[in-house]
Image (cartoon, rainbow, N blue to C red):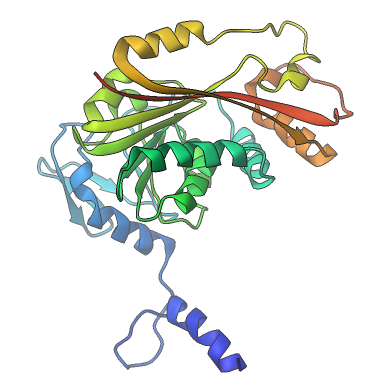
Length: 300
């Protein structure tokens, strides 16, 4: 293949005029995001008055006139009031880099298998509490045709999420008031994040599923062993609360070891709240334990 043939697909992706009048400017991240939101506005609702949205220049507007601007980086800020989060930009950045090392790849594979087994076709899915978006960006590669939305209360997290190249709709919003229409979602992902089951039930379709991931008792065991005041814990109460709200279909235990380098050890230390105000040893153990519980549940 000659150099002209190799460059042709790149030129076609960068320049989108297509009217025979020469090359146009590159499509921006904001423009690509605007197209994604415009094509899927029916699943959203205004966080102020719960009415439907219409596409407007530079953002979206509900029937009552509430306008929300689309950020230059390609996300919507739909949060009412000040954010309430203790997670820092450095934590999100470390988590994104830890994901890039592949430490959660087995988890992504297992969640993808659960979704594929459900038989849902081109599902709408929301990651409620998506943080910096690494999980959703990876699961998107497994789910052909899925329309995915990442929501987190942290603007720092969503700004970092918007740097992923996958066509995902990113929103700053509150899990307690999801800006989604009732019965609009096929899947709610809730990955190592707090839950709001009233909202999850509201936005799920009658045949929709919740996939929740919890840390197991041995999760990040090597860090826990080096920190004072960190005790073992159980998910028994959390699972009981979930069972009160939805019907559990599957409960999968996933446990594996990840080889540790010095770089990855530092990233794991930075990404977990376990190390707030505490510092584990500088020399990494040989392996890190990832112990996780995956629960698939449906509305009763």
